[in-house]
Length: 177
Image (cartoon, rainbow, N blue to C red):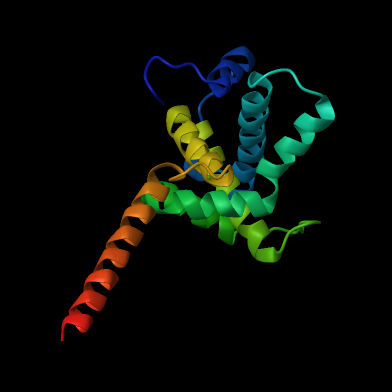
């Protein structure tokens, strides 16, 4: 847990007299269950804090961030920045055998979204809220089309510039001969 920060999970444990469980004992679907809730709360908070709006508009905006297809896009943006431990929790969630299916998503989108939610659950239950927020911000920037889409987007942009520079250099060399 991050020092000096009290999380909602800490408050719930304190009020109900619960002890911290070994995170490794949770199934990936349990992590996804709580991860879905915390991610939804973060998105709703972000939208509400932007200013008062009609509830149906808030719901539509939130849905565009929390649907499986959006979570798949977020995962694609943040995956290069994950630590090995974070990546293992994502993969556990993605590969978990779920007996439910998504109504409006492909099997691949649903599985990747489940992995994303398991990652969110892991970060939340281990008190890594700053890291959770960093990853969510990177992902939502990507969804919103913010140039660079955070760090992963900047790295991708730099790699693309390098490739384009090499291609331009190659064509100059070919023309010189």
